[in-house]
Image 1 (cartoon, rainbow, N blue to C red):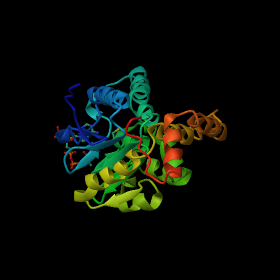
Image 2: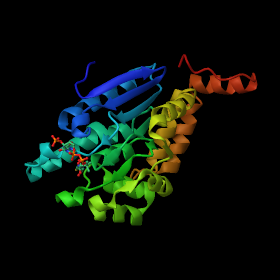
Image 3: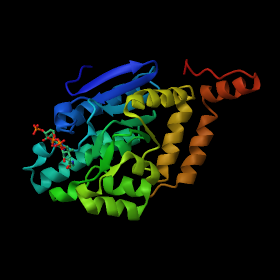
Image 4: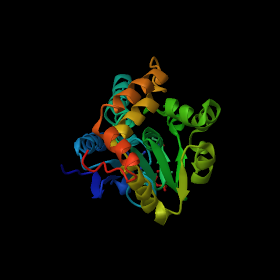
Amino acid sequence: MSYTNLLVADDGAIRVITINRPDQLNALNRDTINELDGALTEAEADKNVRVIIITGSGIKAFVAGADIKEFAHFSVEEGKALSADGHKKLFTHVERLNKPVIAAVNGFALGGGLELAMSCHFRVASETAKLGLPEVGLGVIPGYGGTQRLAQLVGKGKAMEMILLGSTGMIPATEALQWGLVNHVVPAEQLLSTTLELAGKIARNSPTALGAAIRAVNAGYEPGTNGMQREIEEFGKCFGTADFKEGTMAFMEKRKADFTGS
Ligand code: COA
């Protein structure tokens, strides 16, 4: 599939999806969200892809938010549909993908950009990255999961403060690291190589177990779902997989497990 607003490239088993609207600081317009939906579906279906990295093109921005120019004249109903459609196609889609998705945050991650990074399974940031939720200064609130996922990641008090401060609540990567909002901060020129290295280590593990782990962890954050019960079910299902046979046999045979065929 070819894309107008994305660059898609593989590094071995790692698919790197780069949001490519640098002159608009990679703002998420409708077309870009639709393309990301397609690229994620494609990556999930491709057996050769084991881990996905999402990043932004250029040195300035990961994603500077939802495209303000596109929604500036929306009605109440259009606003609600914008949020619901984005949740389904992109943010919940990323969060529930059965392959690990890592955000490589290369600059501004604002509004929908931070919400996209937070939907990923974890985040690596460059020293130059800045993160924030400026929406209240525009007369709206974070509408792509920010009110929920930020509180889950950093706690309610810090989330409230960042959201209520709007653009003045933006924080540098080093502070985001202290908050636990990002997992690693590296010099800008090492961002992709560090993220690829982490992705490569993850990619050597069992893909069926990776998918099960993502579902089990996510379950703890789904209202009405019993996370422990889901863990028990997912754990049990692993015993029926070829990956489990290979992983445990490899341990007993004192060799490295080989999941390349799975
Ligand atoms: N939506 C649409 N366009 C955006 C955008 C967004 N969220 N963020 C940046 N852009 C566009 C600008 O309009 C500008 O385009 P133009 O040259 O056609 O006018 C271009 O990207 C460059 O941005 P600019 O504002 O000139 O860069 P800057 O260095 O002066 O400021 C930011 C950088 C990130 C501080 C500033 O762009 C900004 O505040 N963006 C909006 C952030 C936001 O509120 N996000 C939440 C949206 S819900």
